[in-house]
Image (tube, rainbow, N blue to C red; front, side, top):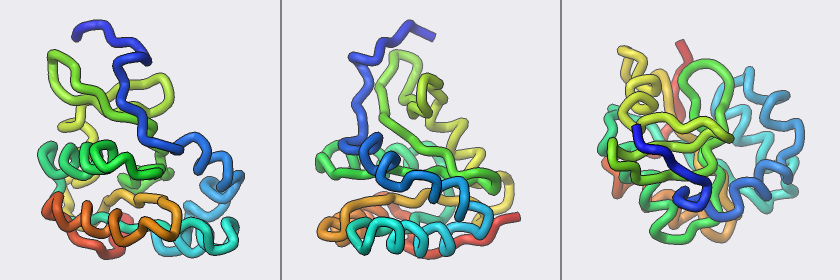
Length: 157
């Protein structure tokens, strides 16, 4: 895989700021699943943030469409990946000669690998929460539908 730099990463606007606003909420509420975390996000942010769920049959094209849509719209967003374990914050997307990659901190992973992890061989057991400012939650919902995904809660295995 070709070397990449942070300069070539298309960061999700305000992802780091949103994560800082959440403080310990991510680790404290994550064990209760996506709905419990969404409720905690609203509470800790005094209703300023919302968590929009994205679920469905995951593949690389759908995950890329969702994340690329966030970037293309310049949406202030912190995508949280839930593949049945902890919620993992995603900080950006990058187009590499070998394919699209998602950025988890300093780690880069192929979109196809992440999508397979979301599906886990059991559709409906993983998803992405788009944590966004309340005024743009309708835009986030539209991105979920545009990516051929559903706005619904999922069950952890």
